[in-house]
Length: 309
Ligand SMILES: Cc1cc2nc3c(=O)[nH]c(=O)nc-3n(C[C@H](O)[C@H](O)[C@H](O)COP(=O)(O)OP(=O)(O)OC[C@H]3O[C@@H](n4cnc5c(N)ncnc54)[C@H](O)[C@@H]3O)c2cc1C
Figure 1 (cartoon, rainbow, N blue to C red):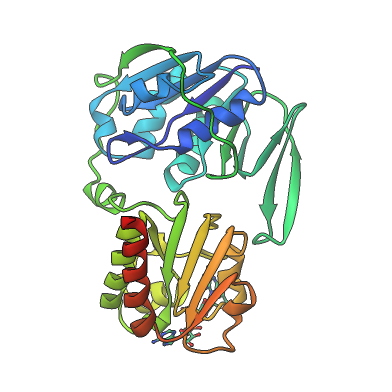
Figure 2 (cartoon, rainbow, N blue to C red):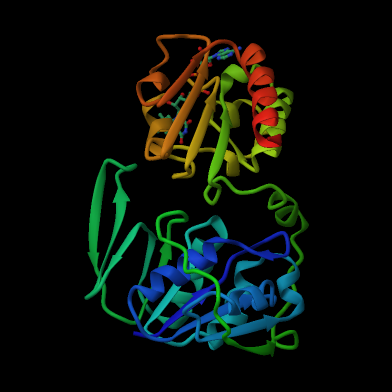
């Protein structure tokens, strides 16, 4: 089985999820080609163990993300039985477009792969697990943090392709700005705020803790719907993003079933809520019954002390 992995990058460097995609591909056997849009992180991709070849695809269209331009330039370079991407917002959209161009099926947000060949993913907001039989060629997006990362130590050959003459340039500065902070669907730690934050300016307290932890900041739908300053891309839940971080910190979030649908499979959940009866405590591993005004400064100080030792 030959696999092409579409690498993921963030702020000009290779995102660690790329090693997870290679880890998943390695478990199936066969040669693995990594395609690096914009050439970002191609030398790091070549060092991932198991990678056979890296194609560094350069061109002006990669300065900002535009699905149509990226898909047009990458599709002709992608070969093989299996195409893998991350199920980040960009990864999902890009792999859909590439699979449509190539006329092959796509399976999104897969959490495990088996030889033979089948994939599993959660459906009905995480209430059930679906097993999908797959025949190659096929495109699959994998949920971040669901697969073991391949180790370093590789030394794959890198070839460079320039596509700047072939693709129209689409400048989308707003999207570039939106990607400045880590996306919730890829983060290992997420701190999310709900309506209990009182006003959008108070999300700065969550940003401060996120900066200490290297976390992404998420939100409940009530926060997103109430305050236009909180973008929909931050929403976690049934109609937002499904996340599986190692740690999810819910602040001023009641724990409605639609919110839980997007975050209950987090490894550890810490809830901060002034109402001891809030349903979020029903799924939390750790709970702080307090206002965030009291809890967050103390949490920030403790974390700063812990991380400085
Ligand atoms: C079809 C459908 C889809 C939906 N999809 C989603 C979804 O994807 N994601 C989602 O989140 N919701 C979704 N919802 C909405 C969901 O039902 C809830 O309305 C929403 O999650 C509530 O958000 P919240 O917890 O921020 O607000 P609230 O329910 O108002 O809770 C606020 C919480 O903050 C606490 N609080 C208040 N002040 C403080 C303070 N100072 N310090 C600490 N705690 C405080 C309160 O005790 C309370 O528990 C959906 C609803 C429907 C019908």
